[in-house]
Picture: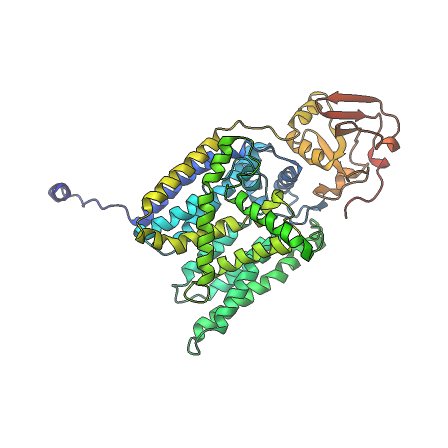
Length: 528
């Protein structure tokens, strides 16, 4: 009756009746509010992590790109570049915030907020109403609160494979929406572009996205009925675009280096481990899965943190159930996105168990895309059964608990960068150029805001370390390096430099100073 009286007043006054906002507009407004709140909380949690030299190197590279060195001429990178993923993000934030450790925290919070929202949106899929909401909340809840102890480092630390999942989820969203389109010919081209783009930054995307999409689309093409020619052509086009993106990405990286740009080291060590190492790697992968879901209850520094981790075991159980349902339905009704997620999860687990890059739980980031993959699978496959069983109140209670865990994580004390104290001491005492081991060098340069430059030395030597470093840092004609900073005693490693002029001790650091340029005395070599 109230609505009828309101419409009557609108007619009497000559105004058009007010209509409720459309559903998509409410979703957008709600998403903006959720994104802002999550970003604020993730930023607070990210600030409890201490940026290290790996992260500092990415920030320094972005700073160079902002100032004109777009292809990072003269840089030796690690075994992945982040050139098309995190580096553009760092450039954007640094253009506003400058070169400071806070950039690391802002970018980490931005990346994870995007990942959570994309996972919820992909889990919702094309479902509407109650089921769409439950799908989205299931996925969001499983990713909501990274564990404080190890999860902060793994998911909210510096750039790692977590951010690689963002363009992968965007591609899966495109594939999901394209299933209802009559004209889908641009989709394979877009898939090839996105997959090439992300593989330029991170070769892990080959196993997490390109290979699974090629496999799934090839299987779908092979099992199509004879009369489904358009669908078979579409499947074959996706297969070709996904498979073709792999050599294309490697060709682009090689072309960048040939044009004078950065050099990316090949992935070190054998890709496959020994048979005897499989049980140990399987245990490490299992522990890493717990870390990704915030359920790593082992070794926690406090009872409260252990209790929060145990609470997240519910998310692990739901993720495992969703994955098993996806495996069971892989050939019987699972859609393309679900099949890619199942295949990608299997590829990541297999790479961790049978490979060499997850030897222990500290390498959980190597399989980080597994978290959003399983969260999306659970949302898409388990929402309907959950609604039928009338378990929404249970979901609401668990979500509230996980949100409380996130708020608790955001109340932890912020931590300075790992070598902030050393950077401040060098700036205060007028030192501007020197040498150090890798874990001090890039970090001090970044922590000082570029006021001090410290070039890295290869471990246990005085040779330039050609890893996350710039060749010109070691050119004697350009720079005058007169000190070496070490964490702990310097020992006799620098005897080839001759007797020092001064030796200073500050906290855990030793600063050894000479009255000459040390760069001409460096031997050739380092990590190639």
